[in-house]
Amino acid sequence: MSLVDSHCHLDGPQFDADREGAIQRALDAGVTTLLAIGTGNGPPDLEAGIRLADRYPHIYATVGVHPHHAAKATDRTILELEALLRHPKVLGLGEMGLDYHYNFSPPDVQRDVFRAQLDLATRHAKPIIIHTREAWDDTFAILEAQWKGKGIMHCFSGGPAEAQRSLALGFHISFAGVVTFPKAVDLQQAAREVPADRYLIETDAPYLAPVPYRGKRNEPAFVKHTADKLAVIRGVSPEEIAAQTTNNFRTLMGLA
Image 1 (spheres, rainbow, N blue to C red):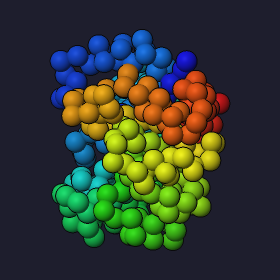
Image 2: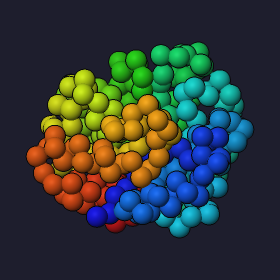
Image 3: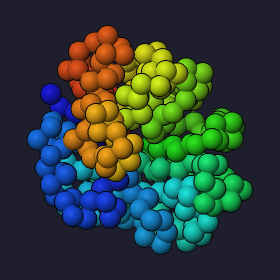
Image 4: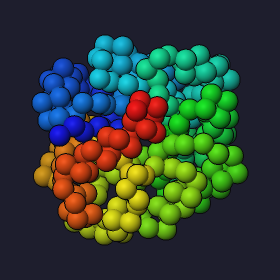
């Protein structure tokens, strides 16, 4: 059974002691492809994902500015992102979007940097990876006004209504460990309803570990538990979830 972790952060200090081990455990668990999200600690370092992709043949990367780091971005940041999009293992731009829970960057700055990255992705016809937290209305308003391409609603946290609105915009829906939490009823209903060719799985490692590792550091090997939960929710086998999400990822990212 082959699995894809469509969103993980392996560059952070949480993996400094055993990064090699975590990557090997993922391979041992059948995770044959990982997408290393390249937002890191924000500008000026934009190559956190690329460094991993250059080192490991089964790891691909994104580049982008997380909404938490939007206040660090400058005009030069966008120019540098544009150059990095030409790297052969960079598959998309992100994660980008809006986060009004923490507001580590002012909301108006988040929106400006979000729009600038959408312009960049449009020019280069790259898929985007969206982060939205407590900002659904503004996220959708910006996307509906500006975005005509493909992308991923990363670590999807909404219910059926948000899923349908995302699908109408052309997005794939990516489910992380939260879908395994017993109280995530609306999220599980959304996972039940998303068309088979439009869903993905991820870890968002080192965050949001699935049951039975909830509360511990997450790692890519644990994506299997999310796949197993989706199999129960959708009434299919784990093998079907693995095959479908792998095919969906490869098709979306131009690896098919």
